[in-house]
Amino acid sequence: MEQKLKAILETGLAEIKLVKDKNSLLDFKIKYLGKQGELTSILRGMRDVQPQDRPKIGVLVNEVREKLEGAYLEKEKYFNDLDLQKELEKSSIDITEPSRGIERGELHPTTKMFNKLIDICVAMGFQVVEGPEIETDYYNFEGLNIPKNHPSRDMQDTFFITENILLRSQTSSVQVRAMESMKPPIKIIVPGRVYRNDSDGTHSPVFHQLEGLVIDENVSMADLKAMLTSMMGKVFGETTKIRFRPSFFPFTEPSVEVDVSCPSCKGTGCKVCKGSGYLELLGAGVVNPKVLEMSGIDSKKYRGFAFGFGVDRFAMVYYGITDLKNMFKNDARFLNQIK
Ligand code: DAH
Image 1 (cartoon, protein in one colour):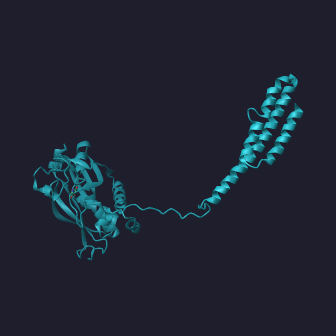
Image 2 (cartoon, protein in one colour):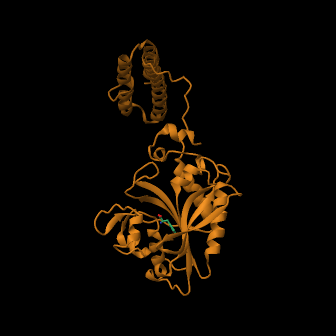
Image 3 (cartoon, rainbow, N blue to C red):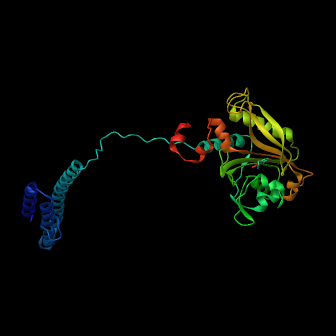
């Protein structure tokens, strides 16, 4: 039996040297390592071996099997490598060529401005709240003291879906939602997309606003002014000045239009600000007590102020972008310039 095993090993190792292709390698595998192969038949013959010799023979069988299997695997790897080599030579892709690198993308200027404004406000203690873009007439208008058929609705050309459902025309809608669901003190900002049936050189049917609302026991117009001065300073630089002009919004009383000294010329007058030194950038005011009451907030105890700005316009001023259309074209060549 021992002799036989040694002979199998010797012929096997000699034979594998002669194997020239995958087919004869398979024949080798069947002949020596297969179920009907030489080693298996030896194992079957074990019952004829003297019991005391069986362990020794068993060890020997395993040794021979391991050696033949090793030789087989080595040959198999050799053939596989050869195939891969041939495959690579055929293909036109040079995997050793250095990479061209990945171009780094850039966030949209409006997104960058949003991030900047939100960071500033969160550092001032504001909580970020969001609301739906498809809104009811109540939250977009009535709850903000803009009743049906009131002329002040004409200020915003609205996309109505049904008589009662619309695409929100202002993030102020979320003021009402927040006042209903939160208890004062409230200090929130609302970033979001808004829609108006408006499209020309300076208006887009879709644009972005950031709304702010503060409600507490002792807040006033002075707090509003201080807060906006600080905020605008952080956006456009510490020397930025702001200016209040009387205005009208149904949900604030008094209402103001807030101008910011032109970041481009620092207030001396240039093309950007059309020589005035100031840019009209946001609306604000003291929350109308009627609005507080409608949402269930005691207007004897609490007062509030609010503000809302167009974030696209902020981004345009900040990055020196002159054409609003570029903001909504998604042209990578434009975005790449704003770094
Ligand atoms: N919602 C107004 C608009 O879209 C902007 C605005 C004005 C928001 C005054 C306010 C505010 O919160 O107090 O024109």
